[in-house]
Length: 239
Length: 269
Image (cartoon, rainbow over all chains, first blue to last red; front, side, top):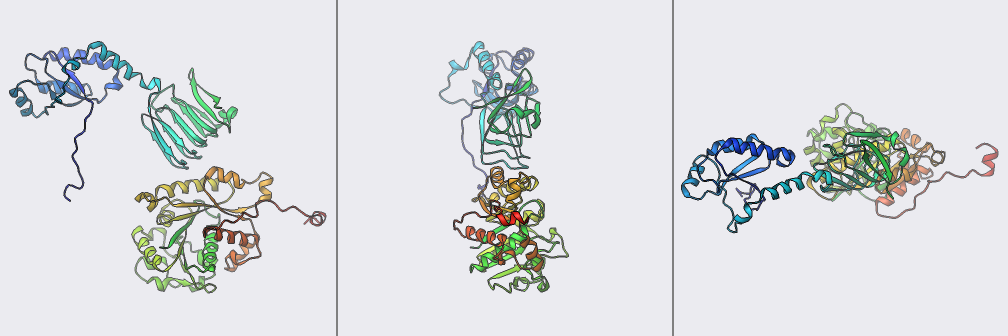
């Protein structure tokens, strides 16, 4: 009974591991800043484990942690310490020491600079390429209700009533009538689109560009999709 | 277990109390044990429509506050013995009700009645929320007019999110659309939304269409629910509503304007 409110379970997560090869904090900082600049959104608050395996001398652990946090990562702990004394030191300083699983792929751990760069590039283009996941809402969205698909596309299986509002950071698909407001690409995403089976919206907006009902005359009352072409909203016949 | 039905709308003046009275009396006439509760605290109307305003001694708020027992407050209908009315208080406001005590009263009533019909106040504030909170079914009363439809849509959103059933993750409240003050002639002339328009916007099953009728006003003033006026279109339409609530399939009537015959055309009837 006493434990009813909590439960401990082991789960595997993919964590980013930062291998440091020098104890020169200034160098580490310079390289990290450069890396972060390539994809600031991707790295923002990413949990980081620091691997000290390739380090041949000791480092100021506290300073490493501070540096990591200054650059807006979430510091998790250290890994890769070879001898027991080093581990003890880390623990005594109040940091967690993360053990890697037995099937440690130390080979793979040394991912080449190029591979990392490629990965970063691939991740950074997610919003552009519309590879968001979908938030699916079944049923009608009534007047006064608001649905927000944060960092997702929004799929509504039902109609959006007048006075209701649907917002997504990605695209919006409505399998029904759109009579309320639809705001796609809410965080700034110019390739977001809005699809609906019956366009009778009060307002549609993509990446901050909006239309009121009067601008939708062309496809009013019919299936339509709306996108941005050169920062101008355009509507097209859906089927 | 009693079926708790809330008659609600969002907008005022669309016919909630008229419909509550008709539904309550209609179900009782079919032999069911029914209690009608007026949730419109401060604006006592249901007792007037039911014609029992002179027999109110204790009210819903007295029961909630423990100042009277349910039996003292319930008024037995003089026409149908299986119908009781729990009137609202005229002197208090809607804050006099609280969820816990309302729940206790409904539970108590549920032991001895088949149907509990709750007449909701207008609006979307505490009073209306209280009326719909414990409901199993909702009769969403709507006029064929845009603002009423919009408000009904809002209430439907509340039913789906603010009710006890929604909070506990039970089956959702069963929603029924009751279209009142319907005038087929005005629909044909394009002045009024059609049944199809309203169904399309609200997308809930249609329970009934009550035609605009002089009989409703007459019935209200007389304190005789319009369902007793078996000659009137409105009375017949409410009768159909009762049958549908009891699970029968009844064809919808009064949806098209009556064609004028040669005589009425000649004499301008």
